[in-house]
Image 1 (tube, rainbow, N blue to C red):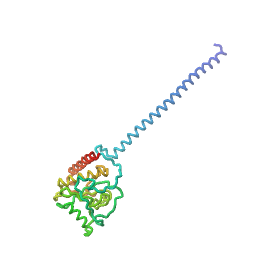
Image 2: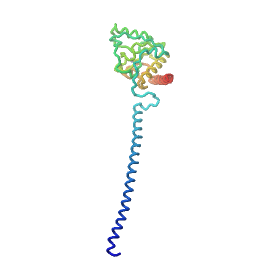
Image 3: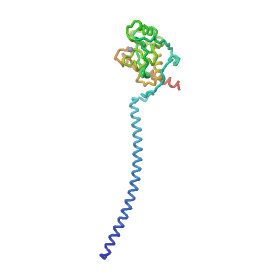
Image 4: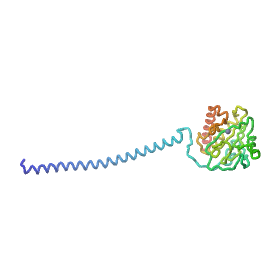
Length: 260
Ligand SMILES: [Zn+2]
């Protein structure tokens, strides 16, 4: 090749090369844009899936991972529970409210719905629901102590309601402004319960917990609040306490189905 053409050749070759190179660059840009778009979409998709998983994970933790528990910790506001006897006609409930007084019924309305049910025993063997209710009433005159409960369940399953559900009773110490307290009567010092008392307590607790959408672990013993030996039988026989809670759980399910 003559020298004077050499320059021309080189230029042409360079141009050729540059052309291909530019073409290749153009293609790469397109691909990059496409790749970025696809990658971006993928990232968003993965993000949504991960966020969804994380949300479910956190929800599971909040629910205590108990898939058998049908209720959540989510607070569901319901109207104050009044007229319990009419609402649960399958139970022998007598509305026999105490007089408003400093020692057993201060008349303080709870600031929100009760969140717990606390179980007690009367520690007064052989006494009836009415006798325990009257003892609370008598405190307004005797000033002997501060004591009461929303409900007392007697030896024949009879239920005395002493204080409305959304009012404070003096029964469960630090939990008083956040719970419904239930006293269970018992025939003897051992503190075990008659079937009638036991069964109606299961039914009442199941109804109340369903009404307030309480989580199952919000059913506790007085013992769980203060360490007091109350209710004696369920503190000394924790396995029987577990059985009691299982019955409540079973009847909550049953009553819920009946309501649907
Ligand atoms: Zn107690």
